Image (cartoon, rainbow over all chains, first blue to last red; front, side, top):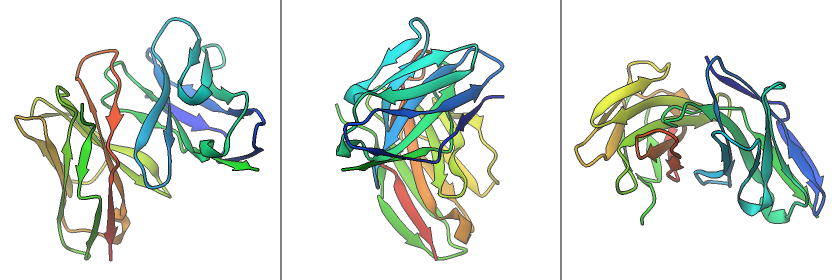
Length: 113
Length: 113
C-alpha cells in the first residue's frame, strides 16, 4: 500500500525568505512522486514530478524537490517566496499510470509581507 | 488544446436527492479519475474509468457510482445524498498509458443542505 505524510499543516514565512515543505512517503513498489498546488476555489496544478533519473527535480514557479530514497522523503523547496505562492500544497504518490493518486493531507503556505 | 472541463461548478442539493456531475477530458485522454476533497478527509480517490470500464475503485459506499462514455467523457452520480457528501469533487484525466501526467479540472463544489 502507498501512503504520504506531510509533516506540517501550515507554514508561515516572510516574503523573499526560503521555504521547505516536508513530505515522507511509504510504498512497497516503485514510486512516482508529485507536488501539486491548489489556489483558492481552483483545481490542482502540477508543480513537479519524479518518475526516475536525477533525484533533484525542478518544477514551475521556481520550485524544486529532492527525492531521497533512503529517507523516503520528497521535500519541496523554494529559495525565495512571493506573495503569489500563497496556496495549499499537496505531496502525492502513484504508480506510473497516475490513474490513482494518493495525496498527503496538504500544507497551507502563507506568505507574510 | 482545451483543459479538463467539469460541470457544473457549483451545486446545491437537499438531503436524500441524487446528483450527477460531469467531466470532459482533454482531447486524446482516455482515463478519467474522480476525487473527493473535504476539510476533514482531504483528497480521496473515488474511482477511475478507462475505455468505458471501471479500472480502479476507492473505499466509498455504493451510493457513489460513475460511468464513462465512448468519447471518454465521464459522469459520477451520488444517490441518497447525505450532509457529509458536501465536498469539492475533482476529476483528473490522463492519456491512459505509463509515465504520464494527470491533469485536473477546476472541480464541482457540491453543498448538501
